[in-house]
Image (cartoon, rainbow, N blue to C red):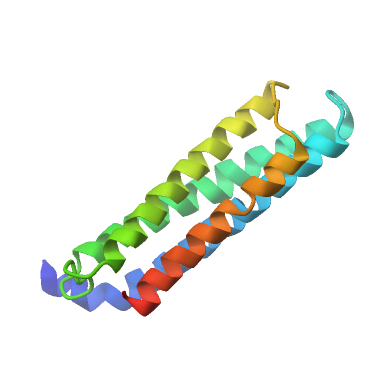
Length: 149
């Protein structure tokens, strides 16, 4: 099994990077949609309904499949012999950041459902601040993998 994983490593890595880029795009864009939804839409107006559709489709058809694909490919990479040095710190910092990103993704899912029920209580400013979370996590993940501290 190990040799097979080594043989397909470049393909799995490629798929992982593409999946992560797609997932990150959604993680950056969805909170921005929430800012517009909070600050510009009125309950029941055309913009409100349009943003609900956009948020739903972004999460359901782009973010959810991309996150599952990123996780699946990432786990294959973890189990590929010779890829992860478990004696180093970086796999653990990356794992912490990826788990945090997943928690953030699920929080966004709950926020989207609140918008769908017209129950959002957060402000545009709060969503702007939350928009920084994936950036910080991305920096930790990329630094962990590239610098390998």
